[in-house]
Length: 310
Ligand code: HEM
Image (cartoon, rainbow, N blue to C red):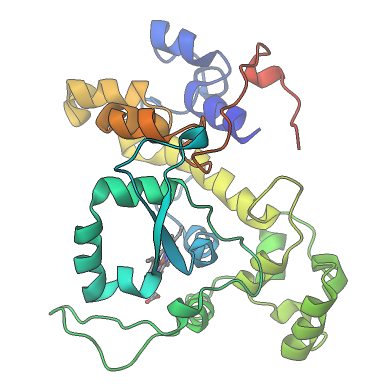
């Protein structure tokens, strides 16, 4: 469903073949959003919104350690490389991180990350190491006061006056919650939410709500966050000058423009720049799947006519 939506946004309902052959034809529905002659701004200068920043706070995706793989051997089943060792995340950030990562090297790091699942966007899954971060000053010196990023994220949303969860949903024309049970079926979570916010659901902080929200089947992110991602994806394509008035060879160079028009996925980028990585170590169709998962079976039904599977 997401892929069909993204392709319709980019190419329009007439599809990629039509756009590649005849260029941008018709309005944004038929011809797609990319390549409009002028940005469509709806009276507001283009920018990434604070709401987008807030729903992009996805630090729960990060693991506790990287499972470093041995890439100097032949691939195992489904192109998986054997595990070498687990490297704790605190060794991979800050000053120490620079050293560790240069010892690991790009290819080994990339392949290892490809073969590791990310964390779930749920309550109680915030990485502990992000709650005790050493930040650096502009001169590169470690600062004495450590950062509790989980607390800071809530603080940032509040100081930027991003709407709390319920108001945020209302602004997106989504139904707000009137009791904790509308948000989640997790009894333990409800107990803790009551403990922190009492019965006042209007006080619920956005980030807490996004993590606690019962997910739609098959979705990793909450419905609330998904709507903002969708809106922002469309808005970027219709209002960013690099997709509208400056979507041309002069801006991108001939080669660059050709790349933009022939690249659809992260896998395409890998295939172009690191073909030896994707060929040897990637079994999946998407670079965002865990790489030893099975490739998608070919589907003869056109993308727009398929029913969502989950
Ligand atoms: C090693 C990995 C990471 C570290 C150490 C890290 C650390 C941080 C820190 C220190 C901040 C700034 C807090 C502040 O002063 O407000 C921040 C902000 C942020 N991070 Fe991360 N982060 C990491 C990975 C990620 C990932 C994977 C995502 C999303 C997929 C992400 C999304 C964000 C967002 C959206 C912000 C807010 C930016 C803003 O306020 O403009 N970060 N992160």
